[in-house]
Image 1 (tube, one colour):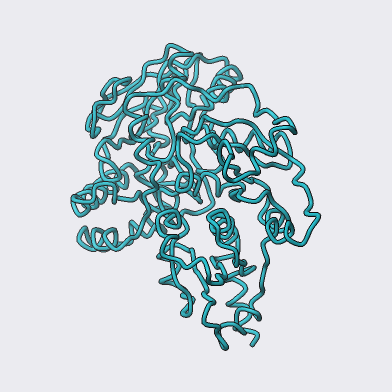
Image 2: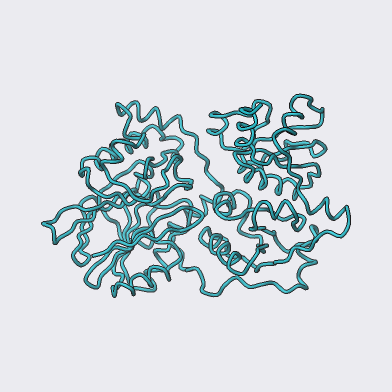
Amino acid sequence: MFVESVKTPGIAHLSYLIGSDGEACVIDPQLDTQLYLALAGKHECRITTIIETHRNEDFISGAVALANQTGADIYHGKDADEPIEYAHKTVNGDKFEIGKWTLEVITTPGHTKDSICVLAIDNEQDGQPIGVFTGDTLFVSEVGRTDFYPEEKEKMAGQLYDSLQTLANLGDDIIVYPAHGAGSVCGSGMAAREFTTIGIEKRQNPGYQCTSKKAFIERKLKENHYIAPYFSKMEQSNVTGVDTPIPAVACQKLAPDVLPAWQKSAERPGILIDVRSHAQFRDCHYPGSLNLPGGLLSAYGGWFLDYSTPIALVADSHQQATESAEQLWRMGYQQISGYLTMVPKPDTVEAYQRQHVKAVTADKVDERIKAPRANWQLLDVRKQEEVENTEFKQAKHIYLGYLPEMHHQLDKSRHYTLACGSGKRATVAASYLLAQGFENVDVFIGSMQAWQSYQQDA
């Protein structure tokens, strides 16, 4: 008997393969179907069942692609906003026999109306529950967000409270297997651990510390989450189903003769996404490219990219380009032309100015604040909750994801210093503004972390 977790980088998603005696079930699969097939092969099991804990918003489900490769049956909660075309409906109390495991469905609305959890029962231990796959209902040190139904926020928060009480009654020793970990857009404040127990969460999770249902609802209504534009594409894809597993063919390197076209802003065939480090980007980049390395590609790519524009990546290596292409593929961005390397060093002062992003330190920012110039502005791109906790009092605040729709409110003749928590998102913001024709932009290195340290030492 085994449980295998599969962590998807970027969106911090966790899916699971559970099985024994030649049978296995996958819970909340990604499009990386080869990973589940390989794990099933390792355990000499056949994937017979696929269960989705809810309709996901931040990635395309791999259920259809995996089912078409294995013949497995797909099950989904009955109360979806739209009928899930590719899945059988499952209701509270439904049971699935997977070798020596029994998987029992528990309806747990709140995050979404169709949310379910899946209780894992060990038939060799007198039918004792061992663990529960909680989807986006319960995380480690956090609970699911309840803002996807703007007109029903209070109702959804109340339902989530009731669902959490149902889970609390399962028993303190039950292992919790959540669908997301730290870094996910599906909740803030998640701990770095990828599993926990019901008992630990009852003692430590802020969602369980509310003294009443009313207090819990009030807490949830005060939360501020962001809904990225690409969520609607993911939701629709996860209604109709998508049979496009991530291809085994790796991202191809583009020939040198395509470079001139990609560098000319008026004739460029698509958008350049630079997935190299922030420091490398600031040092030298292709003019017009957008810096989105590592997890920021998944966290913010959906705010800046559309589905009709081809994408080329600027990467250090074949592996880095391939991993980035896979992140984009999971979000439905499949027009990936290939990747480029070797950003040419500037050979003139003008080229240097176009390919370089200046970085400034806390003392320089302090100097500008104390003696502000009429054309200078500190621009904070952090989330609202971060701003409320620790504010740059002199800064204008525009959340990074809102820049595509709000940059028109900024004056291109002004000098902007970009700030965030550490300087990473500030570099993303600087890259976007430069691509939009802003010429006087720099990045506050270290940003709030550096500012707090500087203030303590002053």
